[in-house]
Image (cartoon, rainbow, N blue to C red; front, side, top):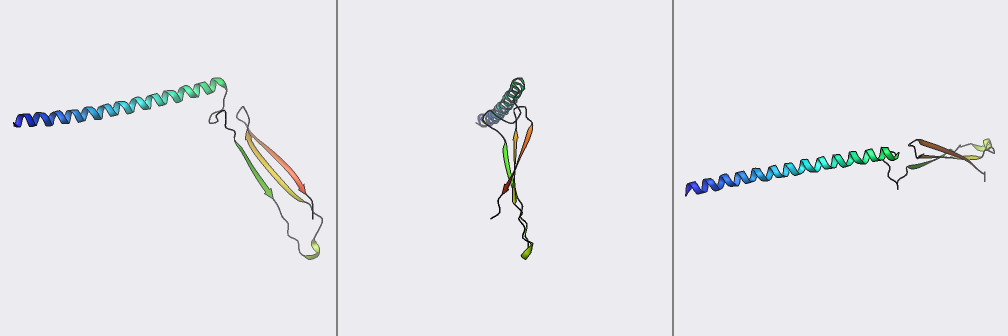
Length: 109
């Protein structure tokens, strides 16, 4: 009886080690496949001349509006038009960052 119980416990322990080993092998294979796919994707991007980090549907554009105001007291009011500066940053097809600035004068009320 004790021999059977001992063999059963040893079998369960060995089965546990086998299952853990299978999980480790599956994890290693999944990581290796992920690395290979990422590497192939990067190589294709280089061949096609696409910039890294941007897909076909993505384009990086940011806009910043800067407004300046001058406070004048009493009779110091002058006919100074306001100005609005807009900066637009985007990346062209070769991966260069382009900055476009627009200066717009606003009329005095």
